[in-house]
Image (cartoon, rainbow, N blue to C red; front, side):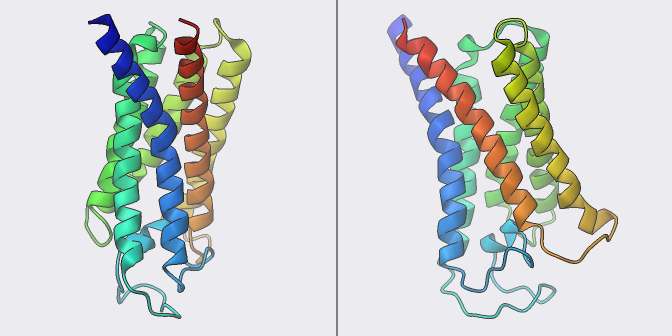
Length: 214
């Protein structure tokens, strides 16, 4: 039974390493197959949908392959992040802060998967995307806080990553709520997604190191 649990933990660690990587890679590959995409005019979610009448006119046609790549990538990345949290739970620090933090990351992962399942113009798209962008960095901050007494530098690093990722949300919601500018939000989205992936990689690597020493 212990061997089975160990194998599941390792599967979770691999999911934490590969899931975010697949998500970021799918964005870049989708952009390659979407010659109309412009970082300053679009949101990343525009890669997961065809032509929309209320969107900025796209300057070049595409074969639609970017739609499948982006949405599939989000689903795989989100499921990977959730599996990572669930399967490595025996490695989590046993504290309320840690449990809440990992729960938020788990919820963020599920909603990232839903981003691909409910692309624009679904009415569910913005809520699930917002939950991912908000819950995941808060989760990272809390997980980092749980490490402060055990590994101060590691905990501070996770807190900083989570805080910077959360601050980028202002850049994401400002165009919609405050009408501050009319440019796209792909850049701040990519910045936050990269930071959240970095946080998942750091925790996964730490777990991998712990397992390797057993």
